[in-house]
Image 1 (cartoon, rainbow, N blue to C red):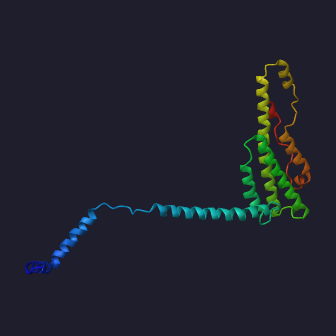
Image 2 (cartoon, helix red, strand yellow; image 1 turned 135 degrees about the horizontal axis):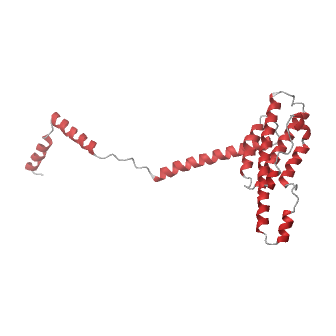
Image 3 (cartoon, rainbow, N blue to C red; image 1 turned 90 degrees about the horizontal axis):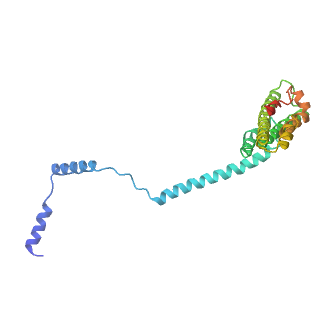
Length: 229
């Protein structure tokens, strides 16, 4: 490097900005930065997948724990009676879930609700045998209300099943071209009892004693006349 070049480099190194010049330049740079549009941070797709995967795994694990312990509690609650610690699991978890899988058919619903009524009455009889249904006690009132509530449900779905069968018979009679067949169908006994209705009456008859003790009217409330309208 010759003397002239070296001298030129030294002169460049000696050039500096004053404090005011540096302040002006810094302010200009900051103003330019503020004018630039803001951009959302770019998130790696791998990180997104990882977060969602961890959440999914946690959800699955929680479900396994709930189902595992819940199934054990549900199974243990099947033999529980009103007043037991597991009884709410039976009536507020297991039975509503079972109701959800019942086919949307009047006969199927009638059989299910009648079965639950039979269960409520069996529970009441078990408590009565243990002398736990003393008149006027909170437990006796709770059991009575539960039976009345389930009885109304059973009677409603049984009535629906009876009406459904009646409409089906009328439609079949109207669509039958053979006058002999139509006359036989019209001449079928009006007092013929529907299967669901017969099952409900059987439950009332079987548990007549506990119904009388709880002062519950277990007579059939299904209106036979609905079948003949």
